[in-house]
Image (cartoon, rainbow, N blue to C red):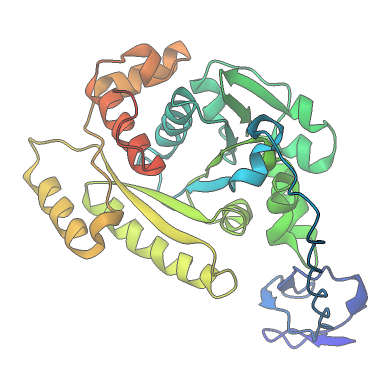
Length: 325
């Protein structure tokens, strides 16, 4: 069939049978712009209704230990993202993941930033990570390493630049590259926390086509608030194609009670977004010192304001107010 790019009018002759059913976007080889695919699909007939069991058959008994975790609850996918840098995304991703692990949850932390700071903050040196998993250079058991009890990490780093190029070269389905790699693995975890890079690039778009929940750290200063507004517009453009992704948590960071304007910003955000706004992360020097020792805030300064605030965040995310008490 022939598909015409709405931007440059270049025509592409493709075989619609080779396009996976979950692909909704294509990239023009002429102008490089993405556009939605509108291909009629054959509807799959509904499965026949289940037949009732014989009356004499007794229900099977199953112990809780024999039931796989993934069949009991769905893995939660949380993306920590904002297009502006310097708002505490990586600090939040690492300490949120570590806090969930301390609460007994099985957590996979995925770093999609070329700086690769998540593994540095945890004091681990993986030999590979997300890029090697996607390209098949490493199997999952080697690409994913355990950083703490209940906490595993899929590292980022400079090699992600190559993954961006790989995504860009795909004619269609590039936005699903990360989702296709992570979805088969997530059954082993309660939470998948994804740290994103600043800006708006193919990896960030990939994350938004994978996660269902978004947490947006917003430092209480003018440029961050402006960046937050721009980020919301970008999210709205993604939601046209993937309604599952939702902004669930707005996390004010760098709260400094000495700065009056910061309190005014917080009040305005709370008026607009209500329950989506989390308790602020107070400015705390311990949060900036902990990475130098390869430790989370819970290990480096468990009694600090930073540790207390991230415990509050874990309670909100899990919906379990009695955690850590």
